[in-house]
Length: 245
Image 1 (tube, helix red, strand yellow):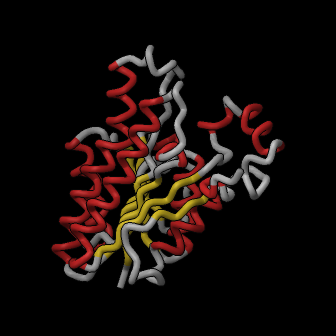
Image 2: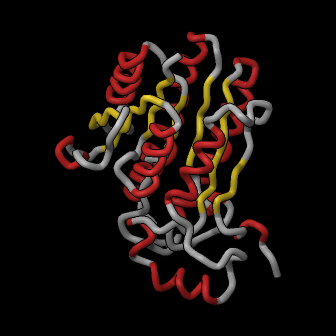
């Protein structure tokens, strides 16, 4: 049976690595992002189809699902990677509604309704599936100069639990992966800060995480080897969540 996966935010560091990993696992992957098709050329090879879609748009979300189903007639896996940081880091007391809406629309609302559409298709097929939401340690670790980002990721955690509960009886497993400090374009601007934190021993595993670290976790979750687990949080954060003294 051919398996099809959708990966949102696929042109970024984590997203592109997740695409490659799932393709290597035998999935036919629909990779989507807002970068033009010509910019995506060379990023993906093998059984990967890239399609430019804006997942904050209901129309584009539905077209994306239809495109994926058109590949093999089914949808087996959804990985919600699409996410942004605030355009400008601002103190919580200065945060604007515009920034809040922008971050929440991309990070939470789009994932919520991608889950909804994917779940309905998987239920129709009747043989289960996998949904993986990429959140962040910011789901529990506060950053008062990017509150909207933290709220969006905390919301994704509850969203994961909601869908896990709703879809368990349908054989659809839903998981959350919480990356820590991963070397991507999003963290490049604050590299010095995190270099110092790593040197100071904030992370039990004293190194930066990589997109491959996250993709490896996605691969395991979408393999079916954890089929008696759902609603779980997989921390890919070098042990940061241990919160040691």
